Image (tube, rainbow, N blue to C red; front, side):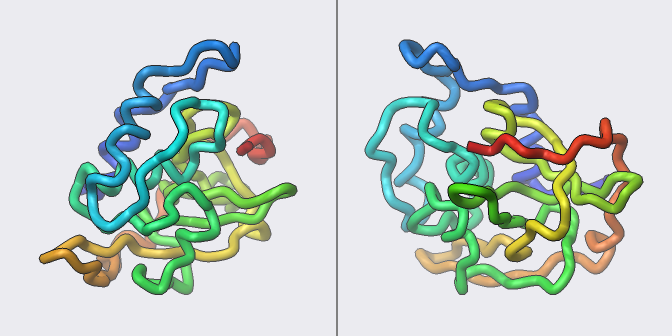
Amino acid sequence: MKNKPFWITEALKHLGLKEDTSKSKHNPVILQMLDRMGSFSDEAKAWWKDDETPWCGLFVGYCLGVHRRYVIKNWFRASAWESPEQTKLDNPAYGCIVTFTRKGGGHVGFVVGVDDNDNLMVLGGNQGNEVSIKPFSKQRVTGYFWPSYWIDGKPVKGVPLESRYDLPVLKANGELSSDES
């Protein structure tokens, strides 16, 4: 897609970023993202320093924050992204935040397309322990949200361009995402 939102360009820079699954070491890039939290808008600081703690909300918050978009207070909870400070959308738009339900919790990422089976293609962190683009069933969706701007110390709602609702069709391997914890 032409004219990608800045936060999507940021997110794409991190494709393939993996957590260190050894439990004795941690990916320094993920740790740097954690260190930045608390400096973007009015979000909470991270109180942990590891990459085992689910980090999908961290990834979304970091990508938005470095581009002066509003980061919700409890960015570490996927369901907290279903925030009244963001514009709730009826349909997915390229670059919107999408929240999901999953066994044991939730998940959050960015919509970047659909596959041939009309599943959402989601760019997110902690998808199989890495930043990836994976297909997700629309039945798992709990909401679509357009990120707010951070202006003069306040979140200011915006809306996507109409063209962002025309989602590109991306190739997928046919397997739906099932590992986001």
